[in-house]
Length: 283
Image (cartoon, rainbow, N blue to C red):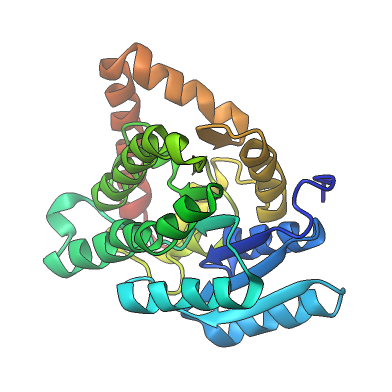
């Protein structure tokens, strides 16, 4: 794990979805750098296991039972963090779910679930922490979106729609928050080797099996969560607006901006690949 010096020592960081995947890796990296970490997740036993492991190394770590779909619960969790730790320096709005499949396969329940977690959950975090950060005159909100929030995708319209919305929210909030001394960044991971690659605890895919999801994900050269967390925190400490990790994914982002038509053609190729994998007989 790369060192982040003393920039994070003593800082108070609240991480949603902190029990696994990117969230757990961020929690570990922040704790290793000396931050006081609050690990929030609806998988509270797993969150407590992470917190206990970090405390065993001498870190300050707390587990918080939180369903980010519950705005009042989110507000109460942030209030407890501030009461206990005295402030909040970082909010990592990281929790999210993946619900994939072509649009004609999605149900209204799918749309409701992914919007409630991936978009409303982020909004609830902002609403809970931003006023305190304004009052402090400092703080950093870090929202986790995805490369699916920057480029044309295929067979994941619901996911991409919510992640595009998180990017838009983050960019607008960044402009507004600067006047209050508050910083805002958005993380746009490429493919990271986390449970979401196969659907995750609360996700699902209406087109592909878990085995097929893993096959397609592995073909995109996923990086390990700890590698992602280290690179992402470097971007956060530099106050970068949009943080793309791994960096090679920026090529697709540039393509999207230079030629949306070509980007859509690239997505069409990816869709064909997805359909081929979905229709292939099981081995």
